[in-house]
Length: 333
Image (cartoon, rainbow, N blue to C red; front, side, top):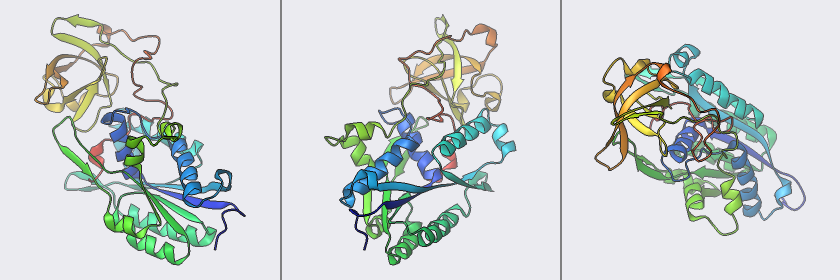
């Protein structure tokens, strides 16, 4: 049996990438934090959590392997979706800088919807093989999927302890859809260390404020931000941000405004990409939130970009936040 006082504790971390993206999108767009999850910060948290659970010194707990699994659209498909291809590469840079090994499979079309196929099986096989070969002391899974129960049972037979980092949350998105994310109870019952991340983050446990804050990216490297410079009564002009499949956002301090493809009154919604100049009106939806309506793509000549970042605004994208990746529609909730 491992004596945590006399040797390095080897930690292997395996990401269910689409689940992680879904969680990060939630904290970036819908949670009061308005920040993405930091890869580096999460690994620091894992080391600290393992040290506490095993009554070991932090310096003896080391993440020795990190693997990230996700379905991904082809380069051609990504190139047709604004800056999607660039943002995929940007996130790859973040993963590479943290020593994360990436594993991608192409997304498949099913009923007009892009879905992952086979990625969970690949994650399970790699996790089991590497746990056996490298003798991890703790296997960490970032997932909520009960399909990984057989993997956990197999890993338990090897004498490796399993920790699961999971998030439970619900929210109503700007299209009125109620999104509910829950972790499989079967999964939680099989693991050695179930960690309810949403509770840790929201309860702000005393003495862990700095560690919890480190779970989120900072805004030190925030890029240029935008503001509407023409305000002719009802009509505003600004730049688009975070264009998704069927909806997008427009920069409008103090908060970015949501708009739906049905709100585009001239031209094709699919021709609007990140950074385009649009005119729009501001209205209140049935939930009492400001949204953009009567959206039209207009000439860039009508817009002036700020030369310096507006530090009061949330960054939409930086090297660590990879702010404009894929839409939640790619995540099969």
